[in-house]
Amino acid sequence: MDSARLDLGEVTRLLRSAREGEPAALERLIPLLYDDLRRLARRQLGHEYGERTLNATALVHESYLKLGGVALAATDRAHFLAMAARAMRQVLVDHARDRKAAKRGGGLWERTTLTDGAWAREFDGDSVLALEEALVGLEPRQRQVVECRFFGGMEEQEIAAALGVSERTVQRDWIRARAWLYHYFFPDSTP
Image (cartoon, rainbow, N blue to C red; front, side):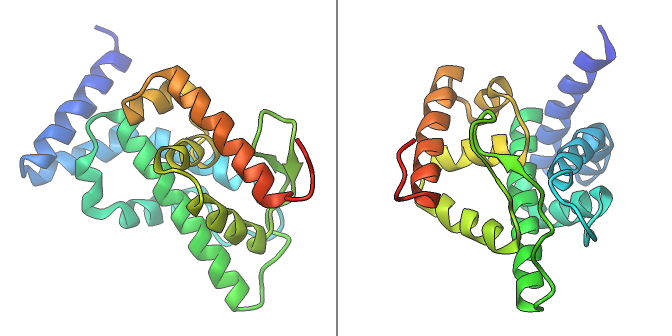
């Protein structure tokens, strides 16, 4: 058995052990997922430019703290990473709010897309907060798809596994979510 398969099985086993109350299981789990968590964090921070207030390590650690006991609800690696992507989004939104409140923000986010390259816009602290408000208007599963894809950088197959739905369902939710977000940000234009 190769080490990747062993690690995936080990992640699921450790999550189950942690849910059953074994305190050391979570401590053994994080090193197995740390590289994946740093990859998610680097992807998120890759959107920033200028002076950064967070580095990948800090984002991983703050997200882990935000996850708290919720992490125990994860059933497997994909589910855990989807939850981590949501926590990272929350940390980034909190930091955007802090920067705005302190009048230090703006200009810290670089061009990114909410579609497969067709629609790009600059994201500053205010735009991150506007995106957070826009996500509230989505159906819960659509919001999860956006979180996993946009904030977590996950592929459709990973999102489907994390949410327990088919890839086709993820594709439909992604199309609907993009349309909603496009309409939210550009109400006077037609896609």
